[in-house]
Image (cartoon, rainbow, N blue to C red; front, side):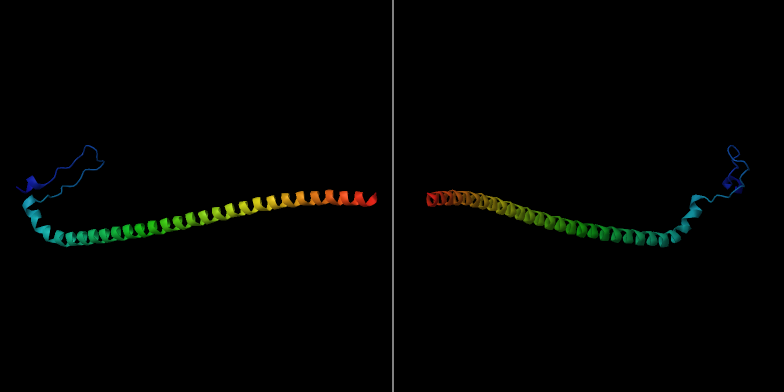
Length: 123
């Protein structure tokens, strides 16, 4: 009866024959479940740690996404302010150009008047 529980050596793909190993029937393996209870608690503890770690990572990911969206919003607002400054500066340049053209025209008109006055005085 003991021989029925021994494994036969497998010589097909092995370079050296395996030794005969006794195998326990299924009924004899059941008492080892007490050890699996402690390993189960270890596994469940690891599972809990994995869940806690995953929750922490998800929370951090949400915080990072919130910070990035806040940063993007700030950059967008600053870009809008910069664009308004550029529009204001462009408006000031146009106004300065208009004033410059007006002053150039006034100077030409004054030259023409002085020329007329000078010609009148020379006669």
